[in-house]
Length: 262
Picture (cartoon, rainbow, N blue to C red):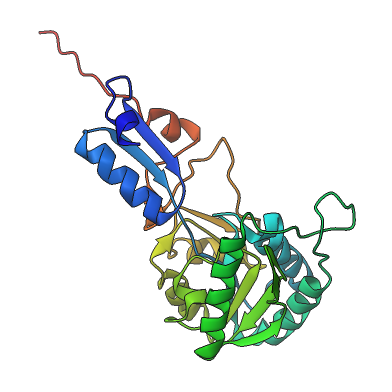
């Protein structure tokens, strides 16, 4: 890798990958004074306020967490739900997860395929086991057969548990119940990552106000977190730096030149 980065024909490096890969590539690029843009891991919060449209919110929550077998940096991972709606949300979320069909991706009935590698499924199983041993409750799923990991839902998740602190790159949904909107913001920000987030509420002004408090590169109100070529995309904290897409992305590797004629 260093042979490539140090080459004089390379003027910048963009990486999409893990925090560990980003740290390594960033260090090598810095050694050779090359600009970098790093889009790394995430533990994206999905905040559900007590006035959210429950049916729509649960449907998108399932899609956001389970698409591509949960293997997306911007998939929702921590579901932060206010107390007034948490019981109903969890019950409906569990129903949606249990309705998923895991199996051969070439079969039309399959909704959730295998994970990319066996070791990744093993890592997710370890994160689940450790979180449960520390007090989280497993409501459904979690079994593993080779690289197939049965979509799982856990509740009672707290800081210090792998399901809260680490990126869970697979079909494991972690629910955290909070007492208020302010606590929801505090819990969302209590992470080493800050890639994407979403907020669910019928009060648009409330959603926008809360979005301004979230430490994240992107916050979507009442919409699935996604990348869009028209919008800048990238993270904060350990999720990386710099932006892809939009005008900001185009300018990341452009040198501003000043010419002064007197």
